[in-house]
Image 1 (spheres, rainbow, N blue to C red):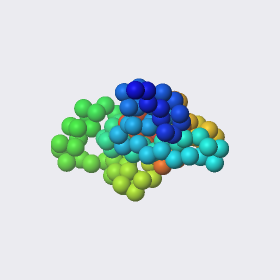
Image 2 (cartoon, one colour):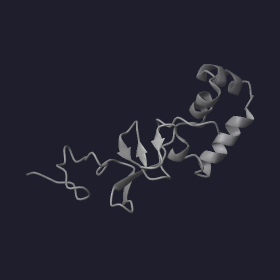
Image 3 (tube, rainbow, N blue to C red):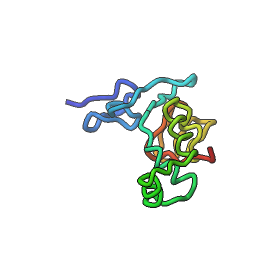
Image 4 (cartoon, rainbow, N blue to C red):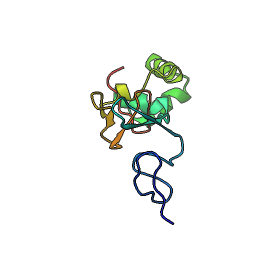
Length: 122
């Protein structure tokens, strides 16, 4: 039996579609132009984001954290993640005009964030 995606009409392969239908943790909505927008909320850890912003190695950060030294910037990143302030709109790979992610090659809603998040300076 051949199945088709109810969102975009493409052929389903292993119950997943290129538009994001069938993938866990994804919510699909439509833009004003009728383009399916995927909503993903799977952020990287605050430590990873901190290391990307400050160009610090993860091992060096872990050594500091084990000694009880928590940088203020790391606390700020944790707060922003909890309040949903860090999203794809803050990512280097997000094209805001098209709501398109260059890494995933998908149309993403503005409130999304994924593991490949590469932040601008916060």
